[in-house]
Amino acid sequence: MNTILKISAFSDGQAGGNPAGVLIADQLPADAEMQRIAAELGFSETVFAQPLGSAWRVRYFSPENEVPFCGHATIALGAALALQEGEGLFDLILNNACISVEGRQAGALYSAALQSPPTLSAAAEPALLSAALALFGLQADDLDPRLPPGLAHGGADHLVLALKSRARLAAMNYELDAGRKLMLDAGLTTILLAYIETPQRFHTRNAFASGGVLEDPATGAATAALAGYLRDLAWPHGGVIDVVQGEDMGMRSLLRAEIPAAAGSSIRVSGSARLMTA
Image 1 (spheres, rainbow, N blue to C red):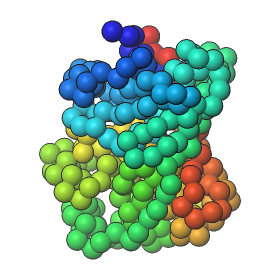
Image 2: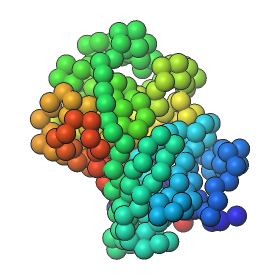
Image 3: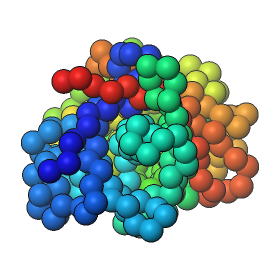
């Protein structure tokens, strides 16, 4: 069995970030084995990669199921490929998309930047919005009217809810089983709650009950989806947003999303990654 690396993506230097398992092998394990490994590791996602021509075939598993795209695990994979193959740009073949990740060494850390799948967004249906507010114990008046609730896609589907209060974001809580049912029924990978510090700086929390995880400390796929949603709304992003995530979990994570003008185009999401020793 090849070595499974543990890498924390979108770290704040040598602290924080979101841990991911990374297994690079000549041949991907069977589906059941990948699911077993992901469940045993217990991280929100584990990424599996094998060489395929000049590219890499990539799949992602949460502790409970396979997911179509995971941003922080892709950043972790970029660091692992830079460690194994040397710095460079790596083409990745996912289940439903072809993307790329760039991996570089940055002193004791690694830096990585992914290009997301195409983005798209839509308004949130009233019934879904009502159910999500009830899940988190929120009222409509808790929402920030500057950023309306919406469905955002950047390789996976997310519901975006912006809150008026940073304290209300810090108090996020919900029942895991109820969240799992809501997300799976609605086809959501996560529900993203955000507080807008400035038009270019957001604080976010991501509920990931669909994968059996209460919360992710850093979520690159949701950040890409959020960035695409902001572009669709003609938000004054100035071409880039910075996202602080995981603070309320004691796992402060830093993500940057670069937003080109073309509607639906790929979002570049970047950050640091640190190798974990345990």
